[in-house]
Length: 104
Image 1 (cartoon, rainbow, N blue to C red):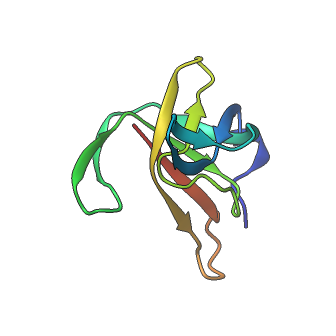
Image 2: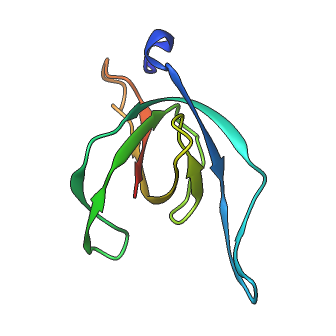
């Protein structure tokens, strides 16, 4: 089961983080992702286990790629970075499977 389409009211642009170069971070081709954006500030843990502040969370379809440090443009035009991505799979239970993208 997926998040119902009528709730996927937003679109974000994700540029996958490819690593650093001598000129700074490198990003992939921008991809438009249909999702639901929740702009709420909350404390989360980054992949290193440190407590950081997330200002927004996007909920997208399973399989959405947005690795940590990827660049994201929100519907408001604000550009931010991915803290971490979590796969939310109900394991066959009647819950909406999705990817949670926690943003700076």
